[in-house]
Image (cartoon, rainbow, N blue to C red; front, top):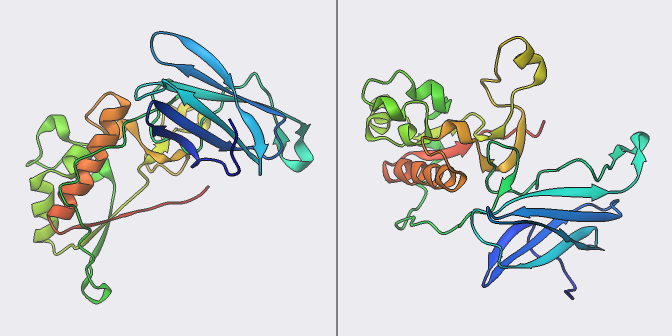
Length: 240
């Protein structure tokens, strides 16, 4: 591999495979662990290139699960705690599985000419809502879709938003997140989602779909349905 600039951050599908890049300016080595369901392999990334570690990955396609391992200095005073034994998530992952791995997905999706409504601020009415909170008890949403992205894009929910005059739906965190150990020890969960693991991957437990590709497609379909119904979508993002 010879390049002057790194590819786009994260995993990007290209003809015949994928390209990968992750920023780790202080690392002395970065390894990508890949599992396509048939075999596992490790690839040493090349770098650093302006702080980025990169690889061309022939044959890598949708469904491949992957983690990172980074070696480097341990200096708590500089917030450096490299340990090559620890599996790491790709911070730019588009999907995560329930086992803690990033997953390569097919980014293609039929948006059907989707265009955000772009209501003027002077006539916008914003509604801050939670995927589960908005849909779990709505009688017009099929029970198997309540609490999900599919439920949020259901005609019954869109009709409800129209009825109360909402033009813009601001969603509380929908990024992949986990519950803090202190909560789990008390038999609780993080309901609000302000503990993101991946800011580019939708939270899997809000989907009716069970597989990572299905989660992403369901999220996109929700946005498409809301836009088609004249409802703008804003995401609440807090970089904790």
